[in-house]
Image (tube, rainbow, N blue to C red):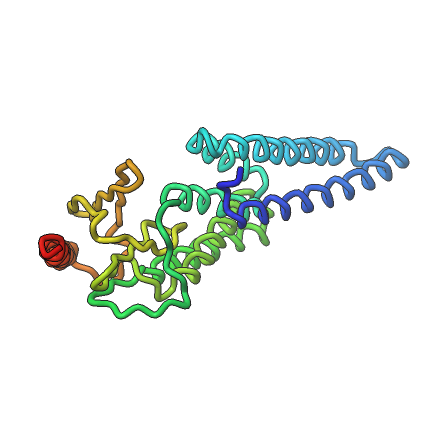
Length: 261
């Protein structure tokens, strides 16, 4: 549980209070309906919804205990449970996906927004694509919500909110960049820009849709897949060539320094 990000627990508390408020309203309405014996079908629906919400929260809370040991299982269970809690469950969905990303690269430091780096080369994260995706989903989502109260509309609007938040969070942040001393990579939408010493980078590869970077640290090898669509204005072949030349130059300098000692 200690490895879960603070935004996950904030989302959990928000959802807990929302379900408590819903339950209080339901109990009041149920009492009123029993007094006049009306809207029995509505009371049954509200009763089922209340049980669904509390059941989903219970799954989230229990799954949080699994995160340290069975992280993938925990992420899947919590992600599925949050669907029952939308739209407020979007806070939890963002929280667990961000927790998973932070835990994957927990041994690497992240780049603070206050840090000013003098880049040799920088490719920005394509936040425009993320924001446009969020806006496209939000339009029909809100339309369905206000026109018919559709569950599909609620789901679309909630997912759109997650895209919009992360799009603004990663605006003008590097997708991949480097200085003479460090490499910065943002692996995905829920990640922070990571500070990676060049010596940890063991191999780079490329295909039509992404650049693949293998890093070795803490007795483990981690594969970072940086999608082309997440990098603004990039030719992957040019990027691979520039990055390979940079690594060769840095490794040569380090080897010369080691020999001089």
